[in-house]
Structure formats: C-alpha cells, structure tokens
Image (cartoon, rainbow, N blue to C red; front, side, top):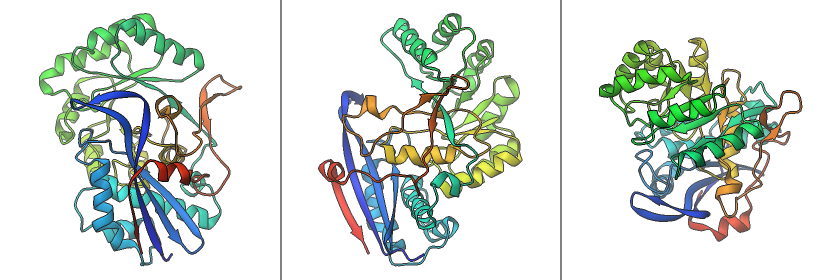
Amino acid sequence: MQIDSIELFYVALPLKKPRETAGRRVDSLETVLVRMQSGDAAGWGEVSPGNAPLASAEWAGGVFGCLRDWLAPLVAGTVVDSGEALGQRLEAFRGNCFAKAALDTAWWDLEARRQGRPLHQLLDGQREAVEVGPTFDRMESIEDLFSAIGRAVQAGFARVKLMFRPGWDIAMIDAVRKEFPTETFHVDCEGALGLQHMEMLCRLDDFSLAMIEQPLAADDLVGHAMVQESVRTPICLDEGVTTLAQAEMALELHSCRYMNLEPGRIGGLTPAVAIHDACSEASVPCFVGAMPQSAIGARIGLALAAKANCTYPADFFPSDQVLQQDLAEPLLPARDQADGTMRIKLWPEPGIGTDPNMELLEKYCLGRAKIV
C-alpha cells in the first residue's frame, strides 16, 4: 500500500485531578497520535509513554520529535505492504519502541479499514468481548484501598492489580488477602526489587496471587529465571521484554510463566503478535497491559487482547474518571449477563471503529507535523 502522508499530533489532555511526577505538578496526560493516509483511507495510532522518561527511556515529547525528524520521513511516500516490512524499514534506528509503535499501530488500523474489517478480526482475535481488570496504587489508607477493591469486586471485575512499592508491600498484601480471601489479585513491582529481596518474593507465595509482574530490573532475565525457579507464584515479564528476541530468550531461560503485551512498549502490534505466537507455542499465556491513554490507544490494546493466548484479563484505564475530555467515546466495561463478569464488547466497524474528535485534538495539541 502507498503511504501518501503521515500526520503527527503531540497532545496534552487535561486531567481531572493533578498529580505529582518526578517532583513536578502534572495537570495533563501527554500522548502522541499518528494519522496515516493511503488514498481515501486513513488509520490512527497512539502511544502514551508518559510526560517524562520515567516508565521507560521514552516520553511523549521525545516520541513526537523522533517521529517528526526521523521515522515518519522514512515511511511517508513509500509502499508498505505489511507490518513486517514497516519494521524492516525502521530497523536502522535503535530502540525508540514507542515511536515505532505509533507508526505500526496506525498502519494496522489503516490496513483494517482498507479491508473493511474490525482490527481485532484482522489480528485473528477469537473473542467479541474482552475481560478487563482495574489497577490500584498506593492510597491514603488501607481502608481506602479496601473500599476501591470492594467496588471493583461488586461491579464484577474478574481480577485486580495492586502496585507493590516500598512501604506498600507485604503488609498491604497481607491485609488485602485477609479482607478478600477468595478474589483474584496480582502485584506489579515495576522492576523495583532485586535478588536481595528473595525472602520477600518467597513470602508472596503465601497470598495465592495470580502472578508477580516484573519484580526485578528490566534487563535481568537470568535473575527472573532464578526467582521463578524459587517461587510457586508465576512471574510475569513486562518492561523486561521489548523485542521478540528478548521474549524468545526469556522463554528459553524460563524467566516467566506470563508475558505482558503492551503494544507501545514492544514496538506495536506486529511484534506483539509475534511475541504472542512465541508464547503460545511455549504454553506461556499473555495479557495486554495499558498505559494511561486516550480511547484511540485503548481500542488498539483491546483488539490485541482478543487473541487466543491472551487469557488473563487486560488492564483497564478508566479515562472517563481520569481525563476531563477524551479524544473519542471510551469503551466501558459492562457486566455480562451470563456469568456476571465485567467485559468490554468489541466493535463491528472497520479498523479501531472510531476516529478522534478533531476539534478536541486541535484544542489540546502542543505540536503538529505533516510528512508527505
């Protein structure tokens, strides 16, 4: 397919409640959207690595600059017939997974629209609705956490993710498990622990967790293999896998028993599908993580979560509760009448099934570029 033009949008979406990030007051969520045009069809991609290089080495402003100055000019005006071909065109540039993912996800949406098929069907999704679960971070008190979990359980969410941080660790999990003895929980350590914390990691076996997400540093696949050999609870790799080669190494080392597929972190849907397939062959299930993002990025993740080996409920970012205005109507979970579980119903329209509101996109735009 001929890529006629690529438009880039660097956007700051106002938050309902300001937060602190790296010692600064933050009142908006910065994200990057891509519009890829071919003839009369256009596809949209989004990546949201954060306002600052904290969760990864990338951040929204840097992604916009990388796309504008380097990646998009290499793609616009050329023929790209597959996600793999797009990846090969960009492989000379090291890293920058989020920037590459912005183009890759836009290409997939464009291809799905050209074929007149929903993106989840083009990706060979096996579900028409996706189970999701919320994430809760440190709160003012354990009672506040109990209230939030209680509301999630009452609503019908199948699982809850709890962020695991210094001072909000074993005692918190112990209290939660006593309060909710039968619910499904997992913890996300965001790489904050080391092998010196092995006693703490072994103690987590006492709480019947679904998994321990990214306990060690991102580059320590051997350390994760050592932890997985020592604990009963499944280890899940998140930041530790950004490429198919890393995923294959982790599977060879038995570093995990779950894999988190977050499209932005791993370079888009093309590598996500490849990692999904490698995990499926190794009998390692996946689930789809999510960064805070608009409804455009959320639909991309949900389409991926419909694949067969994504068997654990996907992350759910409640944009309607966090953002003052979303760029498109968010898809919200609803309780399934059959089993009482919260699921998000997927769409029948081509591609991601929606376009961003251009008036809002322009209103909150910090930077814009068109590459032809």
